[in-house]
Length: 271
Image 1 (spheres, rainbow, N blue to C red):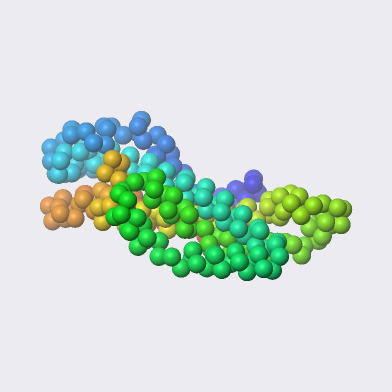
Image 2 (image 1 turned 135 degrees about the horizontal axis):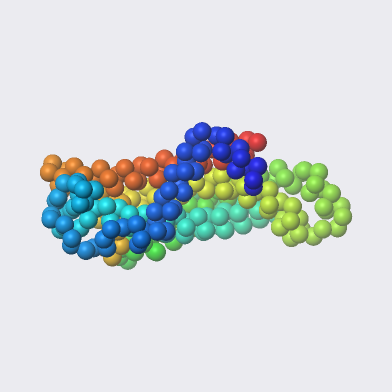
């Protein structure tokens, strides 16, 4: 791990992505401390332009946009945590079993993977939000349970490659069980590859969540950047700051995750 971090530190774009990702995570964790006001508190004149008192201005109801943007990072952080956990668990388990199991089991799991992979996640998220109501947790679970197929394929390919390596053959020759070989020899070698791809998956999930919020189907009890950008549509001519700041946060976060994912791929996968 230390060697990967040292190589990542020498990767210019990867370092930028890492710093950007850590910045978003830090803001999300410390949002109650960093935000000058509560996100739904009416503390400013409606549609006030950015000023010393309100750095990002206010919306049509008088909410401090800076406080809302800061709290919006918590929604993104929660989404990223849930999606990451589900994608890692499902993708690694399916990939390991498919890559090291019998041919019929491999075929079965790959067909299931293909079915899940062709599901249009954005439209499915729209349908679920329209039918069952808005909910950040529901959306995070939906994206997590539908975002793992590509990771499973990557882990499967890596597992099939590692199965033929000398250290795995030696472990089998020493009498190690199939479960022990998977957990002790193969799993530690596929986890870094999975983490390298994870940033791209989370970035895509955040874009879907932002799109749902932009269309007004997000959870009204929480603040998200997509929701803020969607509410700004009616005031584009008179309040430029309403779409600019949430949109910049979305772009910054997605860009940081993509840069970090690409750099990890160079450092870990292409080592």
